[in-house]
Image 1 (cartoon, helix red, strand yellow):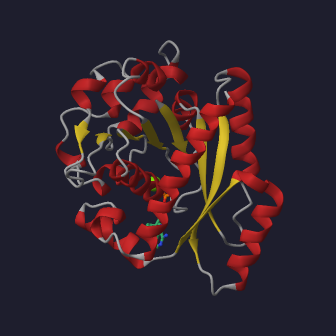
Image 2: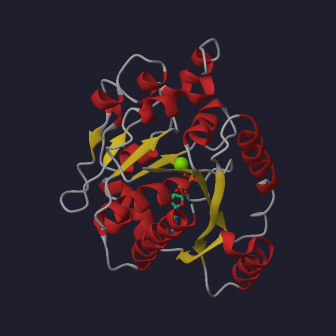
Length: 263
Ligand code: ADP
Ligand code: MG
């Protein structure tokens, strides 16, 4: 089981879109996949077709030890066979977890502990982190083997990246020796924009093979899909954005395969 956190403390940079579409695309490729929504906004939950307003239990209950993961996860109704995957959903309850977890034991590793009991259930676990470097994100980073960082190719893209990288380094040093940055994913890319191309080139120069070769273009079909409760790759598989996420899933599977060989 490979666990990846999709993180970037900025909002609106494509974390949720990436998590939902990668989960569905991996499922389409036959990978047993679980999506964990760690954002109280519950956008990933809704984007998978799960109604966040009617949940009896959510990731909040799992983090606080009030419910088992097995009794809390749901199958994404959006993704019928063959694109079946599970969702550990979230809603506004999760906003309270931050404060309530402070007094608990091992508060950074509660998600890790919950996932540990299900090591043989999945090939991939993808964690959609909130737009902050909070205790919730910390739980995501402590549970993960790697971090996927979606980046918009715009002028301020690199600003704040060092805060995230420093947080990842600290987690690596103190809490999770397994954690590493798997890669930077360029999203909402506009090939006609000079700035987009410049920033993309800059990322390649600075981060080399840490930049995924897949480029996700700006594509309105990806933005429309959540309002139908569907991942973009299920909503319109032929759209350019969906095609990119399908390619990204293949790239991830390949990376994980090479990774195993080097271990
Ligand atoms: P985050 O989770 O980082 O806040 P989202 O994935 O919710 O970011 O994306 C922010 C907004 O941008 C959403 O409205 C989403 O539909 C839209 N979006 C994300 N990726 C793309 C894309 N490649 N093309 C067009 N719109 C996108
Ligand atoms: Mg989000």
